Length: 292
Image (cartoon, rainbow, N blue to C red; front, side, top):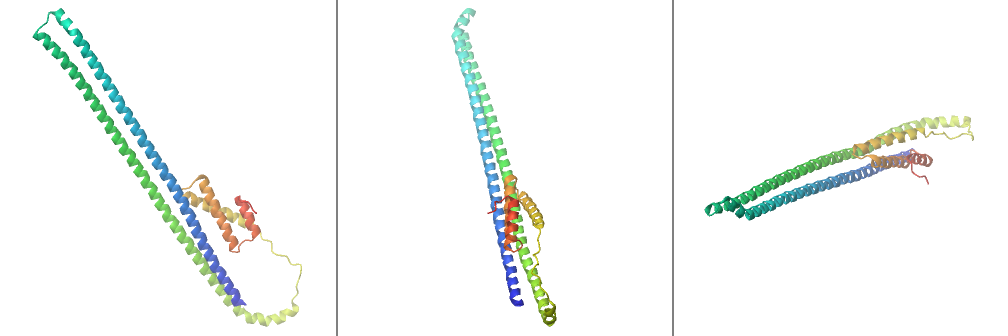
């Protein structure tokens, strides 16, 4: 009978280890999924911001180019108007001043040269302004790309660090499950040996005690307080919430993650035989889950 009891306890310890491993893997998978979701959300925000920034830079550049060309075209048009009006009025002015022949032709040529110089000045200013706009636009784009690359690098580094932490947590939880199993089996083995050693003495005393033994039908079961489990649940929840915050989650995401992990802890306690159905229902209600 003792051997069978020991084997049953040993199998229970192994089953508890298996469940701990499964719970550890489930927690790891859930946290990895949450991490990936947070990473992808942040990545999408970075990309959206980058595209928006580049769009604004392009729009500003296009508006600047259009403004420069509009001003230069208007200036050229005004220079042409001035030239044509001066050309129209010049013969009368020359006649009034008594200028004719070669002198008149020289004055007319000077008028045309002045118009050409005005156009050259305007076009040179146009080109300088366009070059400045392009240089500023190119520099701003490079800065925006550098900022994006830096933010993306930081995001990837954070993800890699969190991934390493999750891997370490998983390894620690699996190692803890193994250690707990070994410790339980060792304790069970020692208990089994002690029990076997006491069998002979118990058998010798049994006959003497049998005649004097009395039994009572009024004994009652021990009342177990659930306050310790409520306090332990609160501690577990605070631990899981800190883990979620360490993973980079916040707000409802962190609270829901801690709540789910706490629920899994309750299931583990129940499946491991550490709490009964009533206690499990009470703890689930404490978390805010509806109890069927």
